[in-house]
Length: 422
Image (cartoon, rainbow, N blue to C red):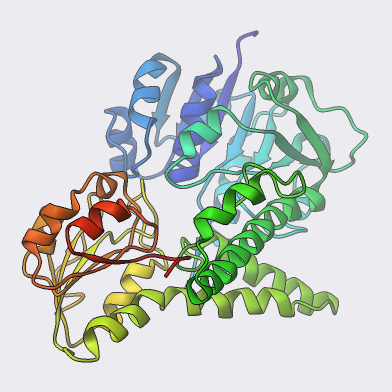
């Protein structure tokens, strides 16, 4: 492709991943942050996030990447993406002030022939309200997934692009760049694109909610959810990539934010959003599944038990603990001594007085009355149940994601409790 420079304003998770992915498509990339320490670290290949494939992809395309704390350096860009992570609070409310501030600063240096693309997740109506001519202003849906962001950024299923009018052609510079990803490009009006991301997350939440509901029924009725899933994946109306794995509720912040967005927008428009509220009620119930198992199997007769917790992150391959089911559990085990291990998360000392972090999984199991695997890190699937059994005092392993081999657990004398089966 012809020489092109693409800028990314914001070097949080979204900006870093997107910048490196853009470089992999053959363009020159300028990444901007006003945090000089962050810029210096990234220029040396030190990242504030954990993502599989990021260091390797960064190293491969290093010559096409530059990072700066000088806003003026973005003036060299043909297209500038606003790529800040949107911070949410515990109630799923988004703080858009940093996004607005970044846009205001970028507009000061945006060339008159350059394009601006908002990549942050924003509510419907946000993009159209910005003070820039519509032929230069676009919104692109980000579909990154923590722990798999690099792959999704470099190999997207499709690109959803919001513009002022659907029938308008995409400007050559942006069209040329987007076509390098070799996937369908779906143009639509700003508001449709902004709502598309929320719609995607609502479908994911619905799938997870169904999986959790039916998995719990399996456990009560003598069925096994893992036996049912293959039948669902072969149904064309559901499909091979459906979210059918039961879990411990909705976590990470993004899905919760979009449920809150739907409830808020429904209130504004007079629509009914009872099902969205029910999803959050269901999520809180699912998060307490490990605690219910502990009470029944251990705490009912030994309230001051020693508990091993494997995993603190809300999901594997990330260091994020936003709304983590593991932290929810820890806050409820105030009478227990907890030994915890996570390969990526380090908790600040003193946050949980009853908790001690240890250097590896087996050390966490040492002397434990029960082991609870709260995050499905791949390394936990490699643990040998007989080794766990030798370290433990008790025999209970709460393994919601079925990380350990059931037959090996049985042979080791462990009682393994999983989601979706007795």
